[in-house]
Length: 394
Image (cartoon, rainbow, N blue to C red):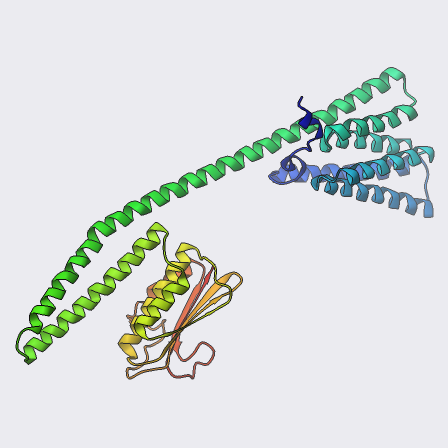
């Protein structure tokens, strides 16, 4: 046995109740209740105690139970001096009980101190404490020396076996936790590998296709602009410019999706400011910014994009305020416009809304969040304009 084995505490898994099955928890609780009941029964059956004596006896037993609870808590903190001191108090209580004529409770206390000291203390302190408890039992025991020796050796062995059993269970729980962590890391690695593959496929197919479309549309625009002015030429040029704008937005969104898949998205605040600058919107950020889970961050980005697209379609020229609030366990996004020439869209729940926010609402609900959209501000529905509010846990 190494020197460290003598001074080391049993592992926390061995000392705590973490990882115990419900059956084992109830078994331990039952043992404690039975031990307390046995002490009370021994006190009242060994000597006839009535009146205030009975009250004092019950109080003494409960106090012993409290000291035992404090000992278990002290060993969880690896507080050696408190643990040994509490055992000394319990053994002193056993001596007092023996002199008062309560032999059975005193014997139970000595046995209990011997077993738990060997099971829960470092061996360098467990052996002396256990021997002291067994020595107190042997000094007052009136059985033959052979019976006392066998009992003492059995209790010493029982304490050590209980220590080994607790350590074995603790090691098993640690190994199980390590195996679960390894499986989770393996699953995460496989997910990242798959996401990287999907990102490559999207880049090779969709991003290249959109980039080629932009090149051709730009060439078409330049070619059309060299033609003489006329209604037909102007209509074609307007459609080409619109198609080029849509292709550029699609390419930008594709790049954002690729960044999300690869896990290298820019900070949410920077993204909102960049997006707001393109649309002439204002951005306010409240609370302490922090990294968000990928799903929550992506949802916020998609809702902002959809809300700004709706403003361009249905409230041209409106002033837009984007407000992102970091709460303790959620983030709140408000996108509010001041109203424009177009009519404000109907609420999100109206059938046939057609603005894409219904999909965003479903995405928010999958994350345990909510999305609300309707005329007016978030706190005053009578305000002019339209407001989109998203809440997602993060």
